[in-house]
Image (cartoon, rainbow, N blue to C red; front, side, top):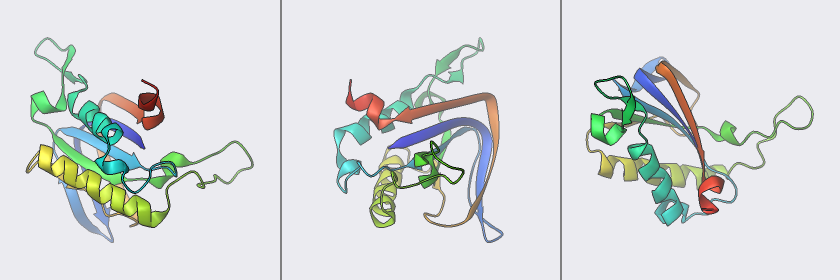
Length: 157
């Protein structure tokens, strides 16, 4: 699993000209699943650890302007957007290979479970894109702050 977190003043997802999700201040998280993420990954401890990291990373400013507060502490919102292109392999040629990404049916189920996990943890504060849709994602990256989390980095810990 790969996550790209962007601290935002606001973000939205539009599909076929219609805004399907939007948030105010918080995090936009691009979510990708790899071939090594099996069907039960979303219920496992590694997925839970990554999700808790999203909630608890101190990447929001306190009253003094220091990055001391988490999404959970600020009460910010969360927008989750599926993105298989996080698994693009660009070593050879000019066309990225996406063979390291999870199969669409597996990824769709994992993404749905991840969104549900988020909605249970942050009731009323989670929005999501549409899996597999051609989406326009708009955001105002605040800071800018962008963080990449990869399950491989957590599995070795």
